[in-house]
Image (tube, rainbow, N blue to C red):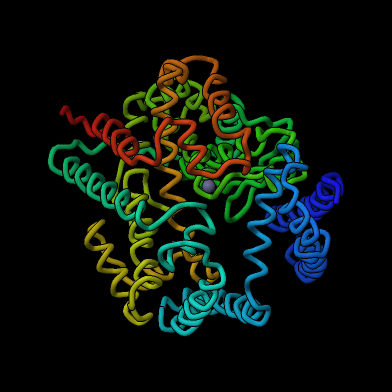
Amino acid sequence: MQEQEFLQELKEIDLLQQALAILEWDSQTGMPDSASDYRSEVTSYLYGQYFEKKVGPKISEAITYFEAHPKELSEVGAAAFQLVKEEYELNHAVPNALMTEYSRATSKAHSAWQNARENKDFSLFREALAENIRLTKALIPYWRKDEKTAYDVLLNQYEPNMTTEILDQVFAKVREGILDIRQTLLEKGTEPRVDFLSRKMTEAQQRKFIVKVIQELGYDMERGRLDNTIHPFATGINHRDVRLTTRWNEHDFSMGIFGVIHEAGHGMYEQNIDEKFEYTPAHEGASMGIHESQSLFNEIIVGSNRDFWQKQYPYFQECAEGTFDDITFDEFYKALKRTRASLIRIEADSLTYVLHIIIRYEIEKMIFNGDVTVDELPQIWNEKYEEYLGVHPENDLEGILQDVHWSGGSFGYFPSYALGYMYAAQLYHAMQKDLDVNAVLASDDYSAIKNWLTTHIHRYGASKKPNQLILEATGEPLNPTYLLDYLRTIYFDVYQINE
Ligand SMILES: [Zn+2]
């Protein structure tokens, strides 16, 4: 087989994937509800074609051939081949009957989860969750390569080469560090004033502000767009068409503004992957964790930066047309970084968010590496919230039923969010060796920051593994110290603590 033939097959797979991505974007942003039956018909038809090709004879022939003739592959071909092989092996190991049973169970579990949410009652989800867990446990031996524990197998599907051994240490340190910062804020901190955050700012005013900001940060609007949706996401159709979505709340501008800045980080990543990888699986993010590191770099590192906001505040005030004219910059900035424990993960602030993830990680590890029963889960959940965040869910909707992930069988996914935080802070630390980041954010030209991220992360796409990218970009493996240092600096400033 010629490399050209292999790359042509990958291109056809990618073309189907692009069509599916457009259809998915459309159904989340503008499709009339009444069209959903027709839409699922065309989507499942195309998905069938796509999946058939992915596991089809051409790909299996390519795997056999290039395994024996790796030297015939170019740089791009070799990067693509590695990814194709990994996915092919994962798909092929599992008996068809088990896979069918699993996908039936997860779609059933999704409706059970929705029903349980409406009734705020975990017992209505219990059986379906138990079935998802049972089937995932049955799948693990087929997926397992050389991972030490069952849960490591799940982690690796989202973050290649990540282990519980690493995460146990890292999360223990982060948990202690955050609890310590929270304790100091509680004892010695001055709560910022936040009443004005709910002042009305129209969607048009918010949009005007944030669209200018994300373009300054490096999101290319000529190769993108921003639409409204219910559950925000970013989608890279191809590198000339990377779309963002958001939702707005006219009495909580921070939702839309930080939401867009977050999605723009995902978008900037996809817009800047090297063109040479186009039409191959290397033309994607390296992992969930690395993708989140880019969105969180925007949201948490840039979005928490005093110099950045000092520079932007006059324009923000202008866009708000007088609404915030009586609020000083200092009052405004501090309000943005107020921290308060919450029950709901997606409403959490940047200090407490990672604790929500650690709770889920610990529970998932108990499920797959321990012997906890499904009936015990709500109580364990509630006790951990009490212990780490000092809050207690009134019902299961505020507790264990809040996230969609387990209903879809996505166990091992949550740690990616926390990894994104830690990677973002570690990248920021490394970036400061080359750039005065605060000075750049105080200036009119942010391009040095985007260029640094493109040089060290974006351009490689999925051609390098997450741990390799982080090691090469920062000179060391994952190190949670930088996140703790960053959080301490930001929150001690906002809460006026001098230590
Ligand atoms: Zn994200």
